[in-house]
Length: 321
Image (cartoon, rainbow, N blue to C red; front, side, top):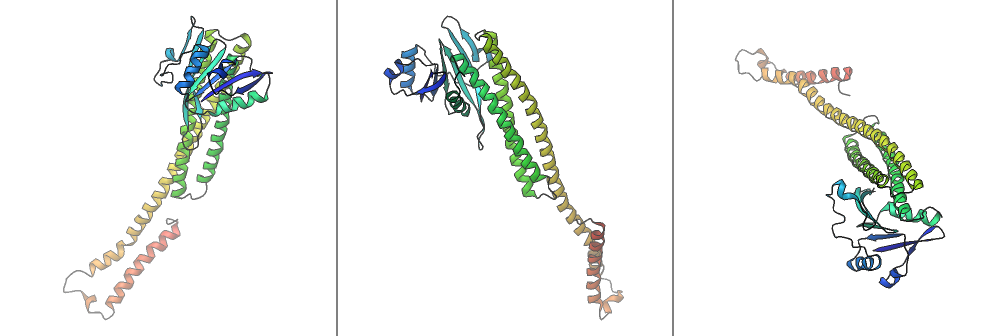
């Protein structure tokens, strides 16, 4: 998909591109290639003279290959990860940026929430974007805000999990559901931390490249300060996650200990009747009780009594609670 954006009255406007002739008549500030077809890549090459390599989204790249500048071709290359906080499968999506001349090219394979948010904001707020570098900085700023909103959602979810598990006498089912929820939030929090680190590296490269104006450099530094505040928030959430994880595992152990305690009490309570039955199961001739008329019901009654008495005592002590 080829999304082309131009500036009109200070607003970002998306232009419909159906063929190479429509693209040739536009002066875009941002060209977004989402799972672009070979035909669309050919249009970009013919219109802008930009050849996009097939391995542009490779994951295994060193920092020197992820951020670099080609002065002879007036190109700036960056590879950044953007968060997709999907409920079922949160992940980080790799995006390749190329500033070629006065146009920002973004290459990725999936739709990104950050990109949708920026397009919506840039249509409503005139003067937000003046050039391609402004688009790139606005994307990083929106990504930081999106990460902050997701962190707030993680905190709310952890609060709900805490209220669910920190209630009196949680069941094993409650603990199992809590462990699943905690694991999901821990994974999402870790991905946000990785995303923040990657964005910080990209902004640091932009500042070192001296490709930014004085105003843009100030904006980049402000974004870096915002990212620093997110680090503290992620660390706080990791502590909360660890607390809830320890509490949940502790409740599971307590419930298991209750089961073991019941079995222990039952085994102790059954020792006296077992002893009585063993005594009267011995084959000695001189056992006066064998000749008693009521010896059998007496032995049974004695065994029942020796079972009831320990359970009554244990219950009185609160050991069965």
